[in-house]
Image (cartoon, rainbow, N blue to C red; front, side, top):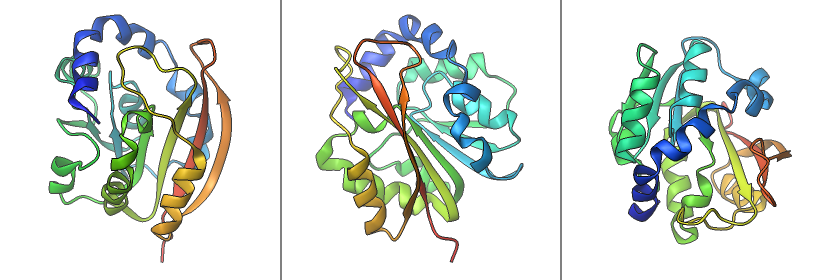
Length: 201
C-alpha cells in the first residue's frame, strides 16, 4: 500500500468512519461464520480501519492483532473498541514487517477491502508475507472490490483468478469464492469473497 492511500484515510477519517461502522460485520462476513477458528485462536486483521471487523472477531473469542497504517484511523479504532482482546500494530502490506516480528502464526487472516490498495507489482511479495503468517490449516479470508475507484484512494483492479494463482503457488487452495453486493449500495461497486486455506499437513 502506498503512503498516499494512508494519508487519504487520515485526512478523511471522520468522513468514512461512521459509514464503515454502520455495516454489520456479522452480515458482511456471514460466509465466514462456519469457518471461524475456535475460541482462543489467533486472528490477524490486515488494514483494520475503524476496527469494526477486529472487534467482531474479538467478540467471537479470538485473540486479534489489528494492523492499520493510517494513524488517525488507528487512533479512532482504539478509542471506539477499547477493552477488547485486540492488539493494534502500525503496519501494512506488502511487508507486514512489524506483524511478522511478533513471531506469531495466525489461524485466520482477514483482508477486507484491502487488496485493491496493493500495487499489482507488489502483490506476489505481499502474498508471500501473508503466507508466512498463516498457521497450518489456517484460513486467509479476502474481500475483493470491483468497480470504479473512489477518488483519492489509489485503487487497482483485482481478480479472484489472481488470488487463486498466488494461492496455488504456495500450495494453498481456494475453498470459497462467491460474488457479493455492495452493502453501501454504491453505483457499479460489487465484491468477491475469497477463502484461501493453507493445508494442515
